Image 1: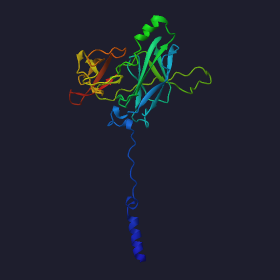
Image 2 (image 1 turned 90 degrees about the vertical axis):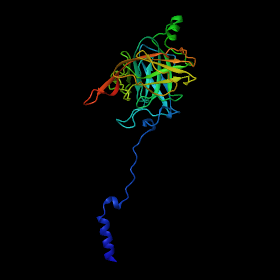
Image 3 (image 1 turned 60 degrees about the vertical axis):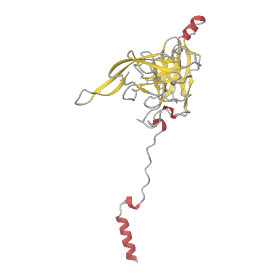
Length: 308
């Protein structure tokens, strides 16, 4: 009996550790729904974004304006360093979008000229696809500097501010070259020189907006107060003076005709009768460049990427 026990003990010692101790099941890599490319833009019906600042119809001193957003039902920012970054796009007037990757931060928007301005935000996936949820969009109207009274002020507002209850087409992609005047920067809450100068915050470094992640240029937009369809509203695209088929479904559209080089794109919102829907920002024009990379050993175009 003793000899049998010794033999069994020796055999168990000789076995490798993984054979003696059941190995714990490996945990699957953590991935948020926001980072999953299998989930499309309509996969987040409860996603919402609002402006905490500035307030709608507010007036700010000339210079920079603080921008804060509140996001619900959708996570923005990287889950871990170097990971995918769901974000919001900030569109000022009808200029190319700028990226807000952190909803907990205060952002300073500089370079605004005196007068009325329109700020819009749209929730986006890490590869810049627009989140197509009813509340994934918000806008505010602001005045920089003293408001012009009377007819002159109303005239300036009428060419800058859309009517909020009418259909609004917000162009997002392709982004195109960034504005030379506008600067978006994260505000430091505790700047190093706060003790020396309590009233002045240290100007933060501008936030670099990364290139769109698609290998080829994609058209994407947010649509408010309208519905696309064969018998509904439509989006008209003109790419390099060539009109493309009308868009009747709300999803990203690959711009197959945009090869390497510079391109111009224009989009308009049309009613079900084919008439332009008049609202200030419903017509957008962009210049963008597709950089072509040649494959080794040949002259065939490889993947194309957008440059700003």
